Image (cartoon, rainbow, N blue to C red; front, top):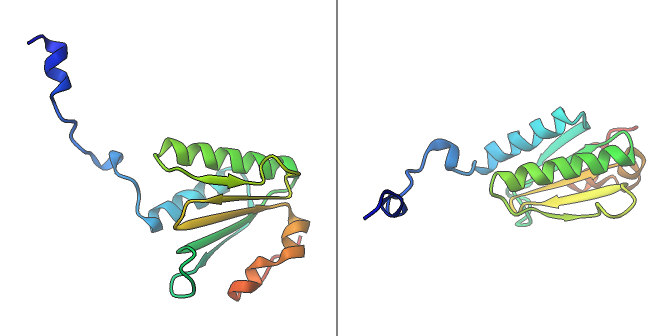
Length: 131
């Protein structure tokens, strides 16, 4: 057997870096990506015990529609690189509101006035930051 054929039969060992983070670790990663992108008013909301929709909801604002779209694109791409299959809605729209759904975590990225208008934080007993 040649060396290249032998290497095909060797199983890759799983390392810590190969494992996907648990939901709490993923929440921290998402928050860090949003902070690095200069998102404002980042608010994680625990949904455990309140609904089966997701474990966490993360709401954040961008200072412009362009920033909202950029935050969404960056977060989406980094999550894909980590092996997740996020679903995204709203990126092709006006940049007022983009949703990224990871199943256990749902991220809402808003333009500040849109966030104030919908006040989805209130649904979960949280205060909506004023722009």
